Image 1 (cartoon, rainbow, N blue to C red):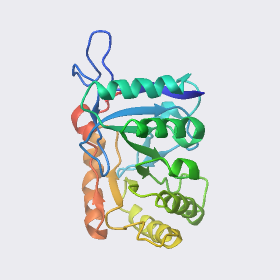
Image 2: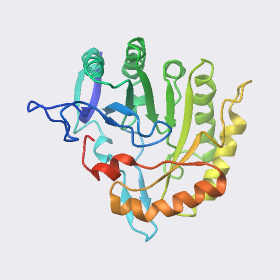
Image 3: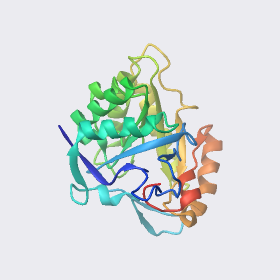
Image 4: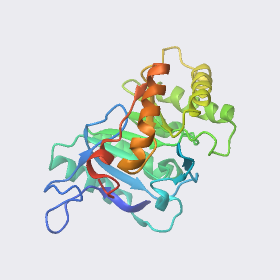
Length: 267
């Protein structure tokens, strides 16, 4: 079985000189976003995405996706998924890393390879976060992920907000059919006007999630993250993001990797 990875592939790993892209002599970085912000992690970035994201910042400039190079099948490479899994486990065992993040692009576009990675990594006692835009539903994958990180792209995905909320709610419902699974909805904030649409979307997801348990906690599972791939862009959107987080009782998520390494790739 093959998997398409972006040019980053598995990162950060040490090179032939014994140094990784972080400047350290050992593999791994920190998860810079979300509930596990600050946790030592290793990343797998897949190639290919079904969306073409861009935002308008507070001064009206268009800001493209910071991983736009993953949008198509070009620019990455195809490799054996078993080799990827073995490499990740070996690197984690050689260090203090117990968390792996599968991101993209959109990993759900490669369901068989993604499911294999999830199951293999979990069988080796690794915690796995799957980062997705939430437009695709796959129940098999939902049974195999530890933390489902959904970053809805409202107004970008070719769906109405209600259709989008239905798919996100379906993912969350199936995720919570197994214990020890958690979810986060992580919204990128570029303007103050994002507020009302996000609140409406969160309410729809909450109403549509079909669980006998309290599977979706609006206060703890919704995170707002400032838009920006550079420190300068982050400084513009961070104050608005913090304001909306406090106003709605949601969580503010920094982007620590940007604070530490700016927009350097593979960090």
